Image (cartoon, rainbow, N blue to C red; front, side):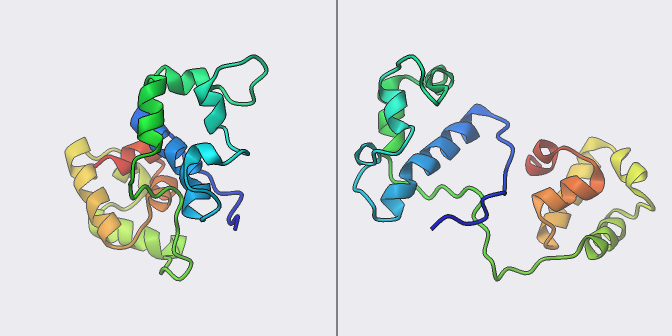
Length: 153
């Protein structure tokens, strides 16, 4: 089943790119449609195995990170990769509630003040905000910090 087709998530480093690629290639296996990534016909997996002209996928990019042999081994490893997996029953804070938490936790009066905090202090607050139930995206959107900065601390 395909869900949430308009969701996206930035891929900001090679390791996460490879994990997302494996997650995509293993979707048919996880769904029980086939036994291995290579068994599924309608996948970019095959384009990584043999580079040809007029491919739909820029497989050379991925193969610039790892070799073809490593790619095959990596894509067939057992794992618990999760990408854009959201529990539909999970609790969501509204942006208004989240802003109150941001200001309460950080003792800041506005977003500009939060942004000007020293990096170490700001990262401590981001960790607390995550514990309070704010999502990476929500913290990023409401503080004006990049998603990568919010995800790292």
